[in-house]
Length: 495
Image (cartoon, rainbow, N blue to C red; front, side, top):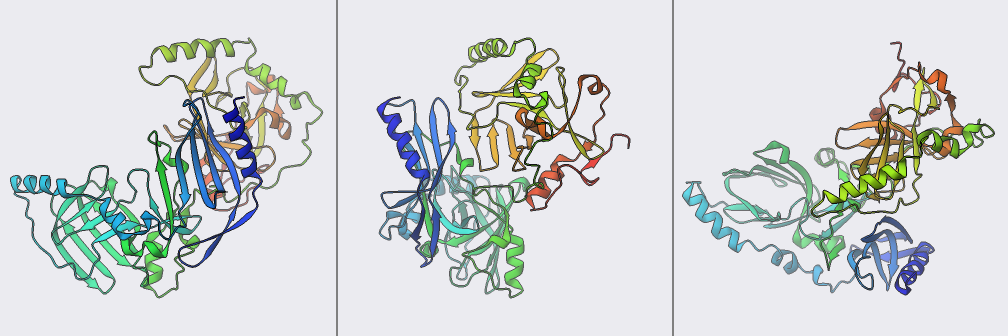
């Protein structure tokens, strides 16, 4: 181990042992920050750690180190900027980072050539500069992003509205109405966004629910925005990337807020605490995406003394002819030879079990199949940067760098693992490409379930399990008995 790697290791160990820390916030409240740090990516190129940890009186949420650079420099940072004199704490910073002068000249020529009408309108008190208001764990913050934020920063003039995307996008105002003291609506000419509806939901900060409708409806979205002057009311999170672009924005995702329910609550006179919007969080990416667990499994596995409790029994079934390593080496060489840019990137499994088998149900009861044949879904093995699936003809390999999304969720390329229990680590395997869902368990957990032997496996007909509905129920906080799935989730094969 190099001296630098040793130093990083000691640093991370220290971060794990940090206690509870109180951090002052710009709006006069304070957050209780639990000091912890977790590795969420560790491959041959990068080490990324995430958590709530303090260095030199600054609260950090994420750091990325470049392992292929001398000295293993820090490339990306996400941190809480509590400095009241920070350059990010000025309205000029937010205005100046959105330069549309060149774009305005280009748009003017295009609209003139295409005979797109451009008029002038009174904005009737609507602020000109807006930035998104984000939430994480129900708590609000404004963000200085790595490149561009989403929802997009918006600027109004008396004739156009423009969005700060990678390239600015603007549209001439067709109509502008102030429907009430808190409700504005504008429509637009051109081929981009069609309508922006704005409902101010907080008098003090002027926070507003925006509904942005595009000509291509799939691009439409709803969000919370604030005038740039209101940044002072909220915590400021800064995202910086230095030596390289930081491509892993999914490792720091804001909450999804039910803005429709929020706007309705305000319009009906309900009191809403904008510093704690947990009642309106539809999905949170903070720490854990699963709110519910299955009912606790037995502490003592029922087959603890049987051969099925032996991990080697299952690994031998998976690779009976000892072909896996040779097939993987051959596949890796062929994969790398066919790549012009990206070769296979080996990544740490971040303590994930390596060997997995499917969990089946019959009449609502769980079973595993003891077979050396390919199961459906197939048995799988996680290697460094690869998922290998068992097939009748051998093994199928898929490149998959491992990321830790939360305490219960991992990502391996297009595969997402959602752990749904405390004991035997049953996981939903979600394949993003075809939206398929499978129930899988590590082979070490086979002893928790009844086993169908090789002879019975040939005629075993499992239930049809609605795994997606099961996962959604868990996310909604529902408690589920894993040993007795009711017909809401498991339909017997005889039906």
